[in-house]
Amino acid sequence: MKNKTIPFLMFFLFIFLTGCASALDRAQQAVDEGNYEQALVEYDAALAEELAAEDRYTALTGRANVNNIQGNADATLSDLAEALTVTNAEGAPAGDLKAVYRSRIDILTAEERFTDAADEVGKLMPLDSGNVALFLEQGQLYAQAEAWEEVVSSMDGALAIDSASADALTLRGTAHLELRNFEQAIEDLKASLNGDVAAAMSDIDRKANLVDAYYELGQALYRLGDYQPSIDNFTEALTYAETDEDISRTLAERGFVYSELGEFDNALSDFDQSISLDPSLAIVYSYRSYVYVDQGNYEAAIADADQAIALGDDLSENTRSAIFHAKASAMLNNGQYEEALVAATQSIELIGESDPDTARTFSMRSRINRNLGNYEAAVADATKAIEIGANDIAALPGFYYARSVA
Image (cartoon, rainbow, N blue to C red; front, side):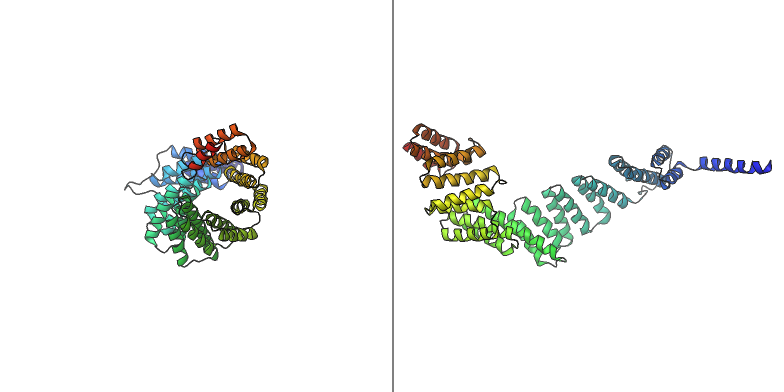
């Protein structure tokens, strides 16, 4: 009888001790056993009790860990947010705030909530003042969210700590590039190259960004009508360009500006070099087609326009419209009026009859229709050019002339 009683007493004692263990202890035991559903039950029970501040912090972060394991990001973030508010009797944080913020940052980043993650880094900064890495991390997160103004602000903070940080200068330069602040972008990206750069790849990235900055500035200056400064910036871009793709596209755009200045030899030289580096670049054939038209070499102009069309399936509708305009112009000047009419109509249809960019094409089609004897259509096209091209000051007199002779 005694031998049977002892095991029973031991079993009873085990049940008693288990029942006396705190819910917090039972939660940790369940986690150790991989029984996460039970762990959540025990953490809930623990948090329903009156707990010391340190134990409450432990319960919240423990439950957050289990929720994270189970993929419940919102519940995890909620528990961690509450853990940040737990203080002891002296009003001091009950646990490691840095660790909680870091966990929240990691979860928000994994959820691709980049702006929220960056904001959370900002909350961590006062706990680790002077840490340039945090500013860089915040800037990179804002960059993921394409919040470029915030990137600039974060990098200003980084550079206030380390004015020679190549990483901060590069990221701020990239943000300025996205914001179309080309001169600031160039200044930062050049400065980043002047510092000590640890990795060769960093050099390549910075140079690539400089190419983009000078290239974009060149295009912006062209749109403003500042042709020579535009050419100068494209030339500067070429000093940093290292890939055939970058060199080819920059030569194409510089050549186009040369053609606008009537410097056809320089333009053709750039176009030919561009094509030799990247024969698949559709737009350069379109640009060269225009030059051939101006030189009276209409067969070559048509051939280039056709090549641009064949290669340009992935181009924007506006760009394809410009290519068909070039083809129509070449055919008009070559006396191929029916084919010119088809190409001009295709150019207009690509972007729509109400788009102001079609005004010059309508004016050209008016000339085509006049040569075909379609006088009513010629008048209608010239009138349409005047209607939608009223802001094209340079071409407007030509639109009126087209209507007067139609």
